[in-house]
Image 1: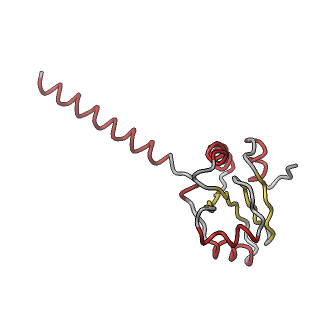
Image 2: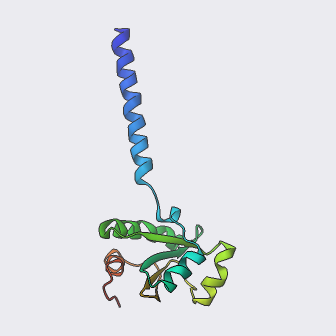
Image 3: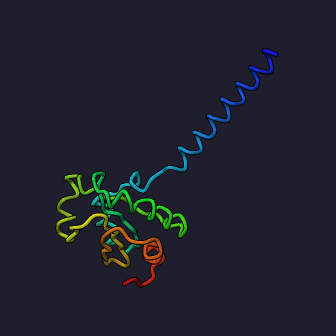
Length: 135
């Protein structure tokens, strides 16, 4: 009887461990995928295509928009980088590119930078990541 209880308890512990491990892996966030100003400038110079979310941890709209953006990025298999407005090394770039609203998606395509400001709806966000025109 004690042996069966031990096996049952061990099985439960193993299952809980794998559930926690799986949940932790899938919760990787765009906010963890940061980009430096130098990387952004290199992307523009090299005319590479990149998507960047500009936000900060105290932005309520950013917190509401992040799951929408992450869902759209997953659906379109698009990598999105994160630029934190609270990082002082980012201030000059943010100011010189007139980023005054968070969240803002910066789209760099063929060396050109386009801004999409505010918390957008899922379909609009998905269209941006797919390179479609949005109003």
